[in-house]
Image (tube, rainbow, N blue to C red; front, top):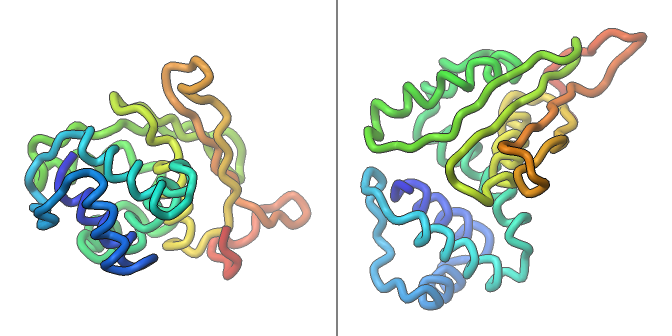
Length: 197
């Protein structure tokens, strides 16, 4: 994974618990130099080890940490560093998710060695869609859930996100349903709601 991912994890931990806790996490994985280069590629195991150590240090389940990390990735790392690219993805959550399959092709211009996941949207009902997530990396399902939650917050859209098929249960990829909530008389209310998931 690129150093940008590790830098984002560092930012999340420091925002949550401060510099000292991040230093303890780095010590646990034997990391002396914590200066990550955003466009430098690092072994996946290195990032997984950091997540595991952070989970232990915070006393959180790995899944909870990954979910928070996914939200942070959107609301802090992506929005602040690649805001214009996010804006180009669509003006609503529905548009953005529909355009998600093409998003990583634009990101690849900045990260040529990127091995991105793939996303495919399938419309299921008027107030929601089904999102197929495929990746050669395992164990990132809750990170993707967090990304979806972060996008919902960014687009001020109240949704219900549910994992309906999972690699951990024998499927070849993960499938989420993203349902817009707040129906009135069978019609979907305005996507832009104040309430957040």
